[in-house]
Image 1 (tube, one colour):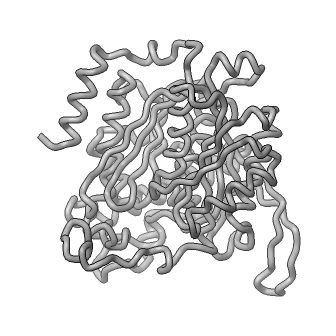
Image 2 (spheres, rainbow, N blue to C red; image 1 turned 90 degrees about the vertical axis):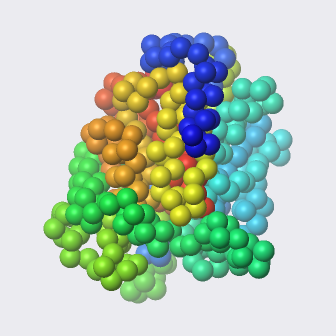
Image 3 (cartoon, rainbow, N blue to C red; image 1 turned 120 degrees about the vertical axis):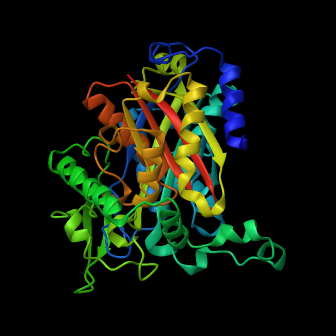
Length: 417
């Protein structure tokens, strides 16, 4: 029995009998609830609407958006946790500055953290756990990334001889495209399957965008933008994901040259886009929200984080989702919507098939292939996307999940109100 299987068995025995959706949808004073979840648009790295905007400026924008939309007194927010992957120094200095610019007082603490692609979700879970343990009453979990300014070879740490000479350790820095290509071959995920999944992501996102289904979750931001053709600086309002494209089909994707191997299956059209963006989530106990008159949009139920082999990074959701479900006391069939990060079509398709999840329940408005994966932002972005769709469709239970660089997976269970 693997470590993850042992852990799942331990979790199941600890929680006892299955609780079911009817139990986790009950309302209790100690529930950790969400009263605001929003994000910026996600824009194309290097050429999109946020190409000239610093990550901390995006963060300041969503911080101010949370204050304005929720009506929370900024002085009541005791801690802010921000997920980020690429910023020098972890972004700790500028993220604290961004909170002050947004209107939070000096009494509001700020930290940054990096758990790669799950950084935004980890930041939110950290705040939820701090509230649950009575360390704080009110907090914000957030995520941000400017891949335009900080993505590239410089983001990869050079390994010492000690790490390089340990096979499994050395695998931690194999480029994700390469290991995903190898995983697709190893797990027999065909290019045709990947391209069909990717095309569906684009088509769902385009349909959702045209219908205005992202409008509620996106906070428009006014930013400075330099026109690459004229070099003219102008102020623009960024209010829509600009990576979503029309006319994408499996056939059109089939014409794109493989990126990592001549006979490979992974290319720019069936992998997540390099993007810029930020997102934030305001959390507190239900009793606190009721006392403050905060409108509750949903609650946090459970979370999991697991490790997998570095070269099989992409299987992370397959390992993490069952653990999060077991902690919540529900089964996969109790879940109405799954938001699973589309790092690569290959790994996402494999996870869905192995978990036996119906595709209509997964990423109903598209995913990172269609509109981007700003690394530290994604885990927070998924929550605003999930809650707005649960509300629109009058459904209740959702799961967010992602694979994580170096070989991990994370997942969380949420209930909408």
